[in-house]
Length: 455
Image (cartoon, rainbow, N blue to C red; front, side):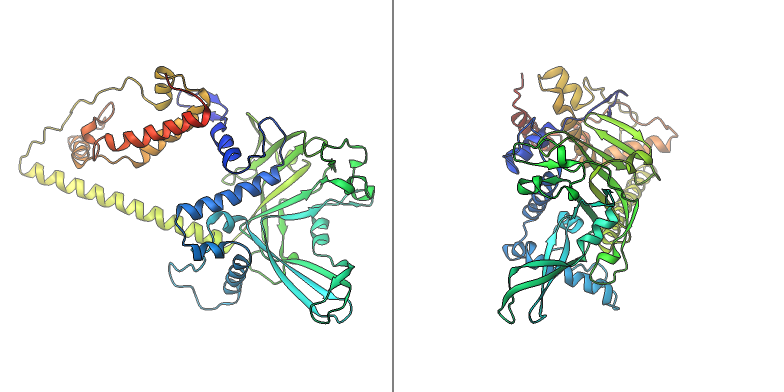
């Protein structure tokens, strides 16, 4: 839910985002139809990656390195440098920033597959990027195996059929394949493969939990229902190809699907407030409620999200944010000092700026939402987007030095009330017109996306 300025609460309807996603990313998605949350997340991450790359104007030679084997080679290089290098990285140096944007850096890892020929024992290796770890849901001793067992199954050796051709000896025959994680991203996503499709629907019931009698969707899908035990903390180290200093992962989100197949049912999410220990929230459409950890841990999870503790990429992002915040705070202090010195100089010369206690006008409408309700026929669904516009203007607007002098003068005479009302147009650097056109363009995009006309 969302708490508005007047203290009331309401749900945010992301209609603009949903319509934009369907139009630009997944036109085969349909409103009102059940879609797979796993597919949605993968498409969203890829779209964010492309958007970031396009917005930053990455050269074509670098774009080519953002996908496929180039990313794998780069990330493997990063991993080796992180674990093996004893020489500290130079301050501000980050060789990978120009090669992958933050969506892939947060979600993408690498899996290493090794295939051993059954005839000559030669081994071939392959590295592939992955954005989640797909885990089979199986039955052990009459019940669904837990996530630990599924991870062990993920790295178990697998016998390939007799159609494998060895690159070294050239023979066609059997082979053994093993897979392990070569690197993990800061956000580790575990995808429990609860859905079965096609021939697998009628296959071995011992591997399908309670799906034997489940109705099949239009595509022949069936779901494995039941609780798969998972944990708050996971040590991913045993499932990696090499030892890493960061292998402990802490759970922070769970997606649950209720329903019989992939084309029907309902999704809910549990999300942890990372700033408060063991505070979990249940997101069920417009209803948001505080729940206990026991409810979360007993949920029939479909996707699990873990934060890898002390991951080097997370540390770099935190350091970059801290540096940015420190620079911003320093600039504010410098500005305050400049304004204070200027006001003191004018006061010592007996100057009268005429600014003290200038009366500021009170606006008829105090927010974009009030304006939309009073002056337009825009849908209430657009109000959250208008609130975003309010916030952007508030964060980016710059006032003149004369206005700051007004504040300093009132502070110097001991008036703590400060100016009332809102700033006049002349108090804005460059005038209000510099903000008017971008806002009109933004409103036009909102109206177009929602199919609503202004009065």
